[in-house]
Image (cartoon, one colour):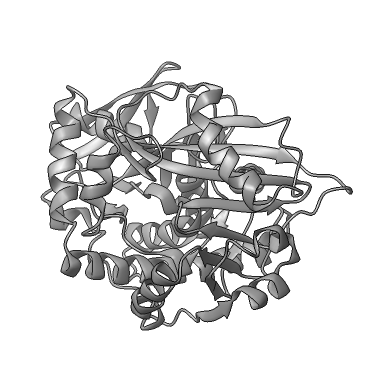
Length: 419
């Protein structure tokens, strides 16, 4: 079967890889110059089933409200006249209940654990480096109150098989001496030894190369403009380079997926949530953390990547704008430097901002659309790196009519009126 994959980010390239493994002929289309040049370009780098909590929770509406007059909130709301934002926001707020947060967290954890197992398989098959670190991740808390609350909440993940260890501040420093300067700030931490990290962009680039070696065609610098349909099927995708014909089509365009489907009269609940990252160089005279992790009270993630330190923060519900100024990073950088002042060269930051394709539940959409040969693998939100390989295998199994290895509750487009 000839399969056209629309999008060359993590979701698209991993989808292409799994389809190639099943013996299909694959072409990947993307407007960028190189793979992983948008959402996958400079993300947090954490592969974190141990952090699979749903964003939509009872405390989030208050955080969003406070963000209207203060900038130091982890989740910011920037009102827009875009009716799509209001529609998405109403669906998101309906998920902000204790019961829905628990259900969505359980489903996310299941997908994340499965996906991590698939990532390990892909890593074994390909054997290419991508600054992978398998030593676990540390999620630390500044107050005893937040630490105790987190330990209770983590029982949800533990019920899905995530192994979680509780550490006091001395044990945190023993695990990672790179956090020694933060000793007096840390009250305690949850350590997940099976979590890991790596450079998602480097992984995607190298997997794309392996796809080409297996015969896939990567057609970059190609703007996708529409879909041609006939008798309940997609016959071609229209592009700036002309139409591309295939037997099946995989939509993996992240935040731009709704735009393409809207042309066909279909709405999917995906909206951009902006995130910010800084990458800093680290040399022999620095004390880089051994492991990645999260300052949970500030939702500030950090990740060593070879001789670099990646810092990420903020979830901004606003619009499709990726612009930024150095001032946008001031708060996150000051907090990171206070935590680990000797970790890297804070005087030479490399800034980036990207758009996460968020659904109200935080779960992606994976499955067949109402067109029999148009498949979705999109909407992975802030955990696209963690979810990518498992999502791709689920998609590939569905295409060949195999039963996926995990249940599809919460991710099947058919349950959302799109079949």
